[in-house]
Image (cartoon, rainbow, N blue to C red; front, side, top):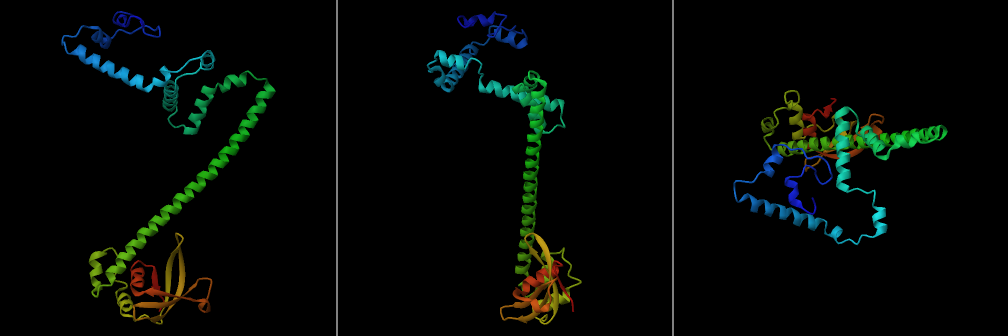
Length: 280
């Protein structure tokens, strides 16, 4: 067939010696076309395929094949053929066991490709048991290592999601603080209708008017993705609309308070978000 390519039109064997199935497609290909343009078009298409193959395999065509190279590569196969076989094995295994994990399917495929079972069957019983015990031991070590890595990865994903949610919350609070700088703070109700204004309308007005100096508070802060509650005392109001607030943790007392400067708009925002409570 290689010496006489036209024989494919009448031959019943393919290039590998297998029987050619005569179906409707093959019959159409072997039939003389009624359109005279079909021949030139197919010639151009086939010539393009030949050009691509020559360009892709040019280095193989120009390779100087020695007897040593021929001997070393006698059992080698083309990479794409091997890849197609692996993908076929994977598809068949996944279809047979749709609920199996990827690791299980991979181990089954490696066992088939590496002929592990045949190798174990060829060993003596003592040697086979020793190898199996080692394999189980190393498999357990690898599984524990993978579990730890997966646990760390899940924790990292949780931390990132927490930081992302905190960033969104902080952005909403910043928008609220910018809006609350308006002298007519009631306009906030139009921009943020979901907040509860009825229970803190007077406190909100006191904060924006600087009338909360000397009052004790309970303030929730976000630290490293977690919420921490602090006690506080509003000590002073500066001219730049900043409150001087002394904070101490739940495990401390007033004498351990640390002073921070907090904008009145930040306090108003935290009050509307239920992160700030006045105790008196």
